[in-house]
Picture 1 (spheres, rainbow, N blue to C red):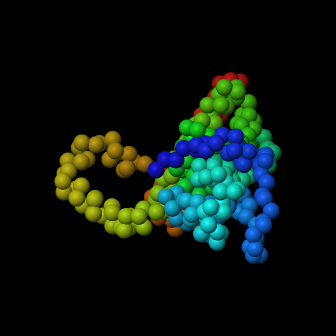
Picture 2: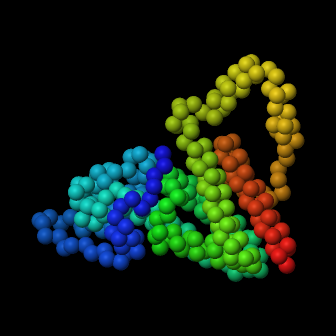
Length: 270
């Protein structure tokens, strides 16, 4: 399920994102109910998406969580399209905006990538928001600005930095998507990873007895592959399910090779 951002009214969406003209009308009806706000609505919507997924998100579901009707929300947020933009931008406020200054440009970039990965894993619905059309919110821009500053420390040309931005985000997103999928696979399918692999491995062995002869490069890779020298993981990963552990290791190695490429580009430029 892919969702495109920026489908609501452009001026209203951007004014809400940047809080340019957010006014809450005074309550005139009876009763002591607290006044709604854009921030409260966005927080409730994020909670719905985190707990139940994007498919469960609706103005009614958000209203129910707040103890209000869906109609009560429309005074503050025009519709679901604008709400999605606000949600997407809001979660990016969780990311750090600065890293310790150092001559080592590599460490801050590694830390940034790790922070963004964990953000996506905490809020997996964010991965369903297409990157074809950005939200253009302040927190999204802050994260982009942070990455550009970190890449700027490499001394590479602006054109190269721009393309590296377009390389790093898909790397992190792809790894986070695999981690998120690994976490929900058993619940969504009703079978554990061990059960799934056991059943299919047995069937594949029986149905394709010449598998090793047909795919020798794959078999050789599995036999010869050894841990890559891109930093040891913490002990917590040893307790993770195999698919998630593999996804995180792939992320770590892939990021390490990409940073090696940046180092090589710097050396070539000098």
